[in-house]
Image (cartoon, rainbow, N blue to C red):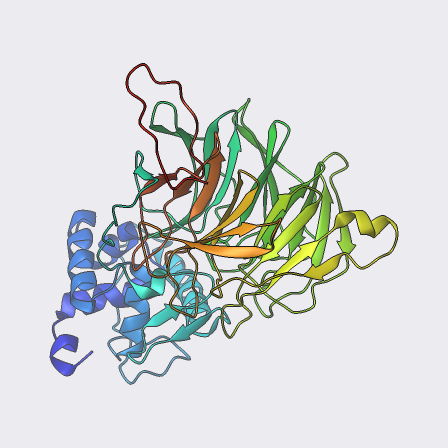
Amino acid sequence: MDERQRQSLSEREKEILALLATGATNQEIARALHISPNTVKVHLRNIYAKLDVMNRSEAILVGLQEGIITLPGVDTGTPLPTPPPVPVAVPHLTWVIIGGLLAGLLTVVLLLWYPGYTHTARGRPAALLVSDLGRGEGALPHRRDLPRWLRQTPLSIPLARMATATWQGRVFTFGGETPDGVTGATFVYDPARGVWASAASKPTPVSNAQAVRVGDRIFVFGGTTETFTPTSRVEIYDPVQDRWEQGTPMPHPVAGYALARWKGRIFLFGGWDGHVYLTSVYAYDPEEDRWAVLPPMSAPRAFAVAATLGDVIYVIGGYDGQADVPDVWAFDPNTLETGGNPWSQLQPLLSPRGGAGVAVSANAIYVIGGGMGLTVEGAERYDVTTDTWARIETPYGPNWRHMGVAVIGGDILTIGGWAGAHLPYVERYQASFRNFIPYGPVHVEEGGK
């Protein structure tokens, strides 16, 4: 940010930004400065516009990095403005601000130095792993009009990095990341009517989590919380009662893992624990609410995808901390009882992909989008009988990633995701053509598989 832009903040806006960095709420700032909460909101909108940021966290970061404000222990060359005296009618506000100052400092340090983050040349936060918030919101991508892809009813808000599962022909999304941060919202989509609805929010808001249904329960594991910290929480949603309960925590906090169900058990592969990329493999028994540690992967990775087809779980792609990877491995849980090696390597992806979506339809595996460190286009279809991959065009790209994916009636639904901006779009891909008995002249659709 140049000097002209830095001076564009008024003295009042600098005071508000300084108090913002202490963790003070709009109400607390209003009381401290003897102005109304609505006036605070107006100033905040102006601050965001002048600093070219989207939210409070980014405003604080830019304010610190550009020397507009400082916090104790963070030397940026400009003293923190002293707020006006606190009104006598609010005797405890001083302690609120002192406590908020410490909380704000902790948050800033976390955002500046957290292992999942790096910085761009401008010094702005650029999330390479657990969030796309630092990248800002660009224009929504142009949609390509492609055969087999049909627009569906969009989400009410842009959403990515959410957990997704299906139950009785409906699609559920849990948590995820919006342009305003991590959410705990639960959304339900009825494809037959094209209608979205809300359900009971997840108790712990997370992004970078996965979900799987077993019977009439949906299990959501780990993920990153609102402070970008991996958690070990297991939360179980009952769609019949629309309520949540807790399960036995995971053996280790983890986010960005791959997840698959196999014969009533749930398998979790790799991920990121806030410090390192993992090779770990865990199995969870929903009936006994119990975890087991299994033979690890040969190399660490996060943001891979996993899909079950037949008796085998396929673990595909991912990100190893340096680049997207193309590796594809078959994991055979049957060998665990005999003590054999459950892992065998298969034909790699045509393009390395981390952060992709995955679906199984018509005896094929579809890996959609992705690209966390490389420019990646489209999707790929895996034929398990021939161990070969084929490319498929997608409506958005490049690097459309972290979308929700579900299969309804053999068709593949993609929900939201990120492609230069968080997306609200929902698309339906016809994975295979069906045969209908027409009443009029026969029209033959070609090109289907």
